[in-house]
Amino acid sequence: VSKIFSAGLDITEMSGKSNEHYAAFWRAVQEMWLKLYGSNMVTIAAINGSSPAGGCLMALCCDYRIMADNPKFAIGLNETQLGIVAPFWFKDTMINTIGNRATELSLQLGQMYPAPEALKFGLVDKLVPEDKVQSAAAAAMSQWLSVPDHARQLTKSMMRKPAIDRLVKQREADINNFVSFISKDSIQKSLQIYMDRLKQKK
Ligand SMILES: CCCCCCCCCCC/C=C/C(=O)SCCNC(=O)CCNC(=O)[C@H](O)C(C)(C)COP(=O)(O)OP(=O)(O)OC[C@H]1O[C@@H](n2cnc3c(N)ncnc32)[C@H](O)[C@@H]1OP(=O)(O)O
Image (cartoon, rainbow, N blue to C red; front, side, top):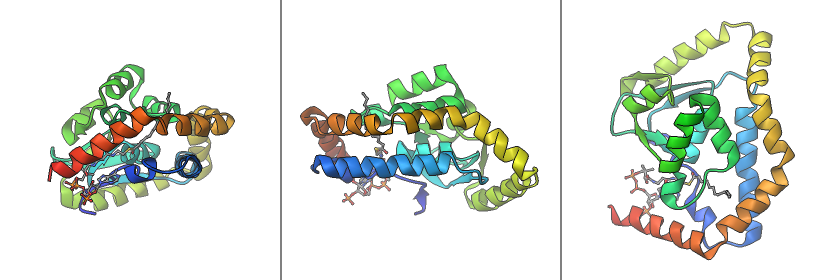
């Protein structure tokens, strides 16, 4: 979709559903992260628009991020703005990209960074004109693929394994945490208010 890289997780999957539904949904989100963050392939994010929360997470899972140079497009883990909390593995992924202090600021405030600020913060690696995002991503891919694969893969795994092992070890507990958190009346209310606001802004 033009102007949106990803709107993040589908909020309708996290509201008004059964606990079994929430558990299956969260397992699928974990699976997505484990596959993408743990992939031994080269992954380049061509960020052609806004990228909140889960969308930002997907971009952060990639090896390199190229974003369209348009200040109207913003990226960030904005969970607190929805009244929800980025789980520890979202937080770990961000820390591994921009460091601890920048992550703390970012997460507590639920900040969305317009493209130029995202570059300054290190959330993305490069800005290019909107119509050059795909070609710049293809060029970056060629550069990354020119590195001997086994060496690049072992290096990637060395950097990411601790975060991945942490979720693998705590997977079931993380699902239980998600279900008990998201099914709280107060959290359901916050999500409802956020969705109503999204619709009103039209
Ligand atoms: C103790 C610790 C325990 C921790 C336990 C875990 C806690 C839970 C963790 C959950 C992590 C959540 C991650 C997420 O990704 S949440 C989703 C975050 N996403 C957003 O905030 C995006 C909101 N959307 C927007 O900002 C804009 O819609 C956007 C910039 C994406 C596009 O803007 P545009 O103006 O082009 O389009 P509209 O706003 O008019 O939207 C069109 C329709 O789409 C609906 N919409 C948008 N985003 C979502 C979404 N994420 N999910 C569902 N639906 C969405 C929007 O309402 C419009 O719908 P209608 O056409 O029906 O009105």
